Length: 225
Image (cartoon, rainbow, N blue to C red; front, side, top):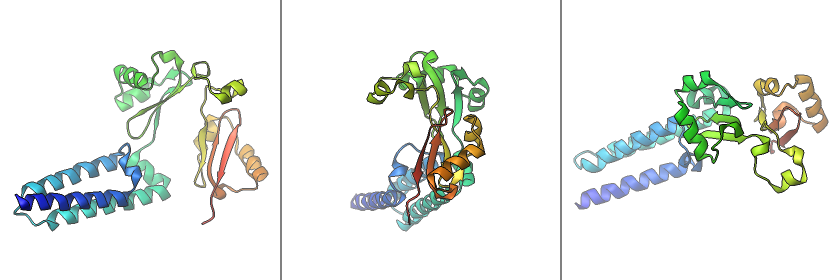
């Protein structure tokens, strides 16, 4: 009995230490790779606790290996947009400008019942109030309501035109340009070049830049390392 008790404590502290190394991001909504790690670690831990005849290191080493692999993979996806797409996929728009993209729903095997349920979870009961709905890489639905359905805020009261049907989209992410956003916002590379010249920045110096079809933009400059 005491052997099981101590083995359980050791496995518990090993997993806690690994999760701390992985970071708080891993403790939120799980991406596919994180979900796989969670299942594998739970199985390894369970087998190690139940089978007292197996060496404890037979569980500790695989758990540390899996956690290390996840940290390395997270670092690679942080530095490479292509790797991130391969590992986690892309968010998928299923409602665009108030129009349901039925093909995207079929591709995701997302039923009408799934859509309505997720809308209700987001506090939206009338689909006509939805301007955009996006299925994130973790499977959750993000909803952006139409301007007339958005709740009042001090900003919208002071500036009624600030409420729009199109949310700001990421144009530059960590120095990398997203050409699709330029196209979606009906903006040109010349416009972007003029904006960056006005701000005295190059694309590589931009940590985050968002914009919308009205050409309203916001820029976060990279911090010096």
